[in-house]
Amino acid sequence: MLTEKLARVTIAHLPTPLERLPRLTAQLSGPELWIKRDDQTGLATGGNKSRKLEFLVADAARPEAGERRADTLITGGAAQSNHARQTAAAAAKCGLACLLALKGTKPPQARGNLLLDLLLGADVVWAEGRPLDEVMAQAAEELRVSDRCPYVIPYGGSNPVGASGYVAAMEELLAQCKERDLHFDHIVLPSSSGGTQAGLMVGARALGFEGRILGISIDLLTGALQRLLADLATATAEHLELGFVFAPEDFAVNDDYLGGGYGVVSDLERGAVRAMARAEGVLLDPVYTGRACGGLLDLIHRGAFGEGERVLFWHTGGTTGLFGYEL
Ligand SMILES: Cc1ncc(COP(=O)(O)O)c(C=O)c1O
Figure 1 (cartoon, rainbow, N blue to C red):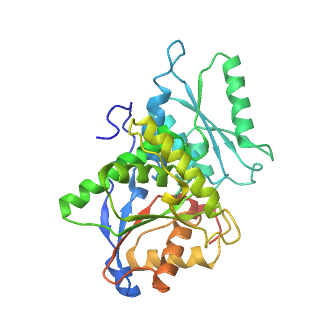
Figure 2 (cartoon, helix red, strand yellow):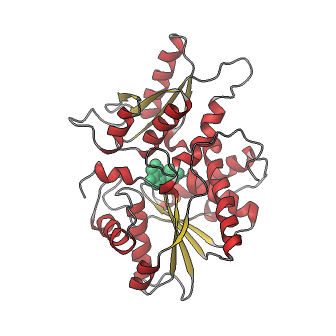
Figure 3 (cartoon, rainbow, N blue to C red):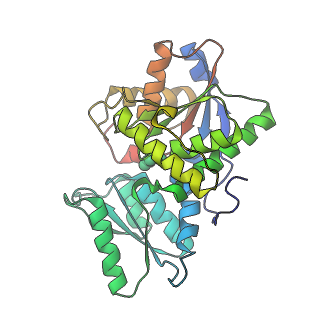
């Protein structure tokens, strides 16, 4: 295993199902569509961050010489952050405290992910316009002063430790493909803080996956996301002692679907959420998988995939967001 030397805790239900999407495929008369169900990782409504947290939480429990084991996980994100919710759940499962720095101000009612953050016992600090990194660093300092030992997880869990979860995920997918004698020409997924796509690319290079891994950008322009992905993938490969170097052009990214910006739900996301729900009984989320699937459906309509090709949509979770946004 590519990640066998890394410390890891068991948080996610793995392997996640790999399923055909026969009715959606038939409706679209395009490529053969499949789905990887990382919305089914099992941790408090699941999602891609569960895989990253298996490595991040283990890292928090194995401090550098001289320091103590962490007793508190700190992370940050949007008010409806799926990453924050899964971090709160991982902390609860592992007996740690959790502090979340969330963008904006406290809403009148806690819904969706925020409702679950609170149920899971996390403390929430509202950033109220301050940069999240600053809020997290300040919270960590205050905890240290009161003799606690915080572990700060960056935005989206996207550092080499977290991205290693998706190197392992690529290995898992290729094992499923081998068992079922399947191959995919394309993998399509939402891409934002980059850990998911970067990890998959490191795994793909290490294991010789030859299909294209297309990230539908959620909030960054193509060039910025490609640079972020190249740096993160190179650092992740180094963390795993693989010695690969990635360039921005190595990453397939599409920024045509940014619409009104992060979390602004439009007809693209609404249409994709409904199409997947009604054709397959699978729930997407309005921010990430709704946008990425909307992009995928549009690309299919435009004939971007060859006849007879097989496309895997990687469902990265976030379904709880359905209860936090107006659809
Ligand atoms: C449901 C969902 N999908 C995709 C992503 C994007 O993954 P990454 O940040 O690793 O690019 C996120 C990030 O928060 C997410 O919550």
